[in-house]
Length: 372
Image (cartoon, rainbow, N blue to C red; front, side, top):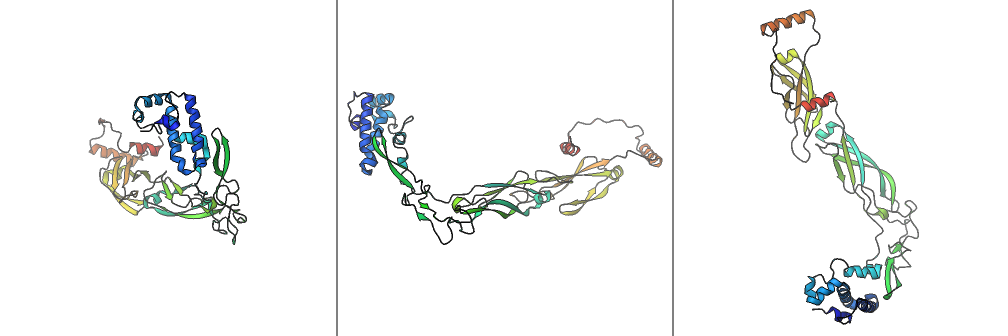
């Protein structure tokens, strides 16, 4: 068991001020930049002892039961850990030895929007987008230097990317480390930058990028093109390009999920007698059989003629809603014939028949078409 009082060299009756003075004296003496790396373990022990004994509550717990009474938090509990002490007293000195910073950095991601037709969402399509972005400099190929030249080792930091300075503190003289201002922390300088990119390793240009739009996409979907974003500073790796899609409305077909919807109007006589309709779909010409006695708002389903399923096999359906057109203007002959039909069917005076109210599966679609 560690004796924190013995580590700091103070009696158990020491005051807080005596503990603080002892810690500062030992920390100044044992700091690795002063005493060398072999003193690092002792320096950490001093820090742990000070963390406990400088806290009245922890000190009381330690006095009653030693390290075990601290519940394993003697070396870095909440509030003020050893790493906080080290950083507070010595700042950037803890960052020594990280090496020079790379000149090339990853480029930013980019977002572009692309509009496609409903047909393209049904089957998928190959498109091209044009993007104004940063591309690799063709003159220096990302080296940032004029062709035939190269970067040179920084004369100030000698390639380390950082410089050390002696700073005075209440602990005495300590060594601090900071990025080299001469080379920006890279360890190298560019005495003769590329004239095309001014030493950036990249230039602005317009690129044409192919985009494969899969079947089943909808407005708001995004396609990620890895590595098609802008090239990073210093000729660094490119970011990603995201293509956000918008599917244009179609004059005939509406979409809900993977299904397509359409409306057809037929005369009252065709609904009563039956007929064959001809409809142009995305798959070509289709014939639709209208059975005799077809009722208004009846739906006919053409399976597999809807939108391709995104990330899955098959397609949705095409649903055709039949609207029956009732004539509003009849000549005398037409009116006479309808009266004869009504007489034959016993419908001279029609009595209303109440049926259960139902919104119907297509009521919302009908409202959408009518603008409600």
